[in-house]
Image (cartoon, rainbow, N blue to C red; front, side, top):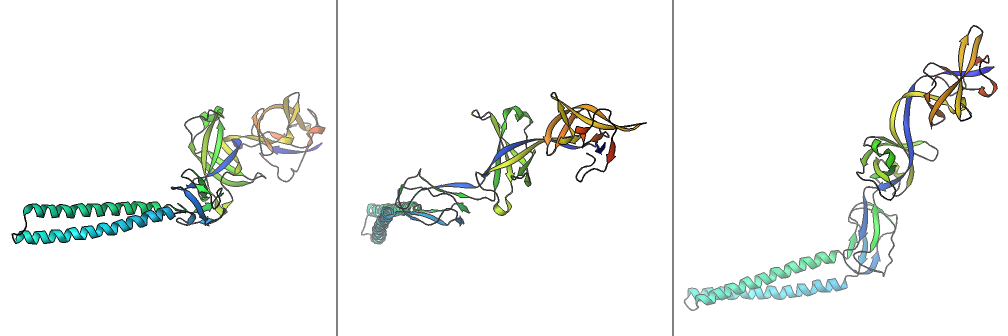
Length: 334
């Protein structure tokens, strides 16, 4: 029987577990107002890319503007009082030097100057505070990014606890992986993480950068994070991705899935052995581990250098004479 035969050779065998990871932005800002009032303008739309300082929302500020205007009017009166007090102090000082005023009058005029100037400084402080408060009626972007959903509408009354929108900067991303607590002792920073697409193709190769120090009591998992490069903006916040976590890598043997037979729960393979009568097939029990791609990882039963029969195994039996034929494309020493 012509069969395909490959010579087994050791190769790196990885202990890999696949998880569903969640992409998170490391630069997500939740936008909320620092004042209360009615929303008079929404200056952006969802999905708009904005820069730091870009106007997002405006809140009715008429009352606050009136408060600032009232304080500025009061300041004008205080400035006049301070100027008059200084003039009076100068007159009293001149009279005192001429012997026409007492020391008490000099002290009283000096006290009046200090009082009016203190009142003027207090008004200045109040105006600065109210102007800073007035600036809060214009909600601006704290950082560059993309505007998220806007759940409010023009005319809504907003408070300090009302979420207005979010700003996401997708240039700094992370993958969140929830690892079962049973494997937590093996979890450490530096482990390789591979992000795959739906077809199993590699999108990004990263490493674990953070391991939580506690277990989530609801899911009995440990949170691990890996920094994620995002060239071209292919990933988005809260996106689910296929992620493989590589626990370890060591030399081992792999065989094609099609080269193994399962009989009564036991796996068998055929190896080619040479003798005086030619090459014969010998059935051999093996212990197989996880499937990686199209291969089984061999735990025991085979060794490096064994000649494994990888085709026609359904048509041969133990001791059957076989003849090697060229391996098909894509097969060879493993």
